[in-house]
Image (cartoon, rainbow, N blue to C red; front, side, top):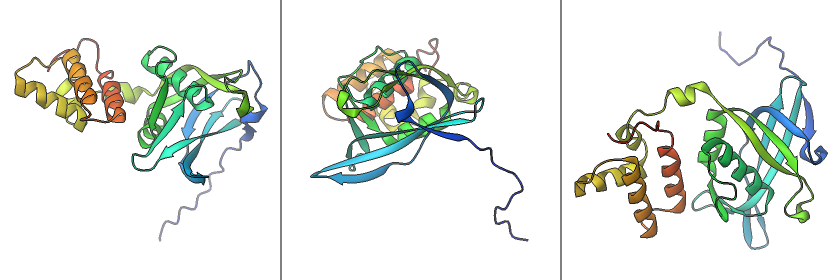
Length: 226
């Protein structure tokens, strides 16, 4: 018998709620999911949009939010300007998860495939709070991440050494090899300096630079050398 995916399981029904229903001060907690990227042309510029869904199993609500931003197909990145709703969400998410300062960058360049993969595979639940929009033209409250729960398997499978991490990241491997060739000590600090040097010289993109730094933060503080 061939399996055509038929099942007797009845899916849970959720009440779909929209971003436009939220008002200042509202909070949502639930499992987060980032949908696929959809591209469109507006005038002479290319844009992309994606849906974020936060599902709360307690009250069976499913909140659907749609983000849109200028898009560069060559690098598969979104250009996120300060003041936009997407900037507020991403900046606060980065702050909560990676302990970076708020308003860390004036603008963000988001490599969407990596963002989607990390959120969907590594984050379990998030809590977001509705706040007044920075840009009134958007007509919606902004969403600020106030807490996030990382899936246990994400932290338990973190690499134990700089080298094991570099084996999975070409940019880190490039920095690692450069230090080795110069005879410098392999430490997180030295790797970070080497990455900054590559970025300043134009040898790596901002996306690769930021992703490599984020990967380094997955190492435990005690791991400072090979």
